[in-house]
Image 1 (cartoon, helix red, strand yellow):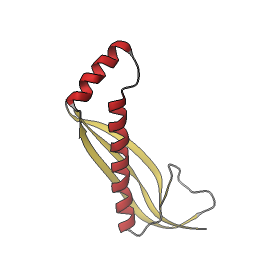
Image 2: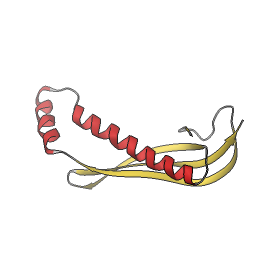
Image 3: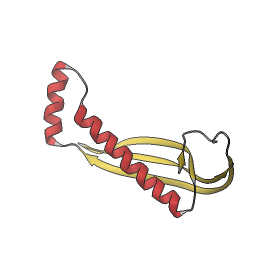
Image 4: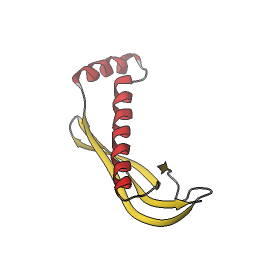
Length: 105
């Protein structure tokens, strides 16, 4: 599966548009990560617990989007975008979407 955030893929021709595909996940903060983050706010530095949480969230949302594209028999997803939103105090959604297409050389 080719995944790009551009409207076209260099060297490829879009021969069929299958439609929009998306994936999302909603994650809540972990109390242990919050405690570690509060200490980092005092001394500064990367909040590694939250970095790991976001990496896992992006991976899971991407996997769900790719699964939808596979169901449509697409071999690429173009114009991919990520969005986040707050769901409730301590929980956020990570959403990824794009257009599933069939490309040929």
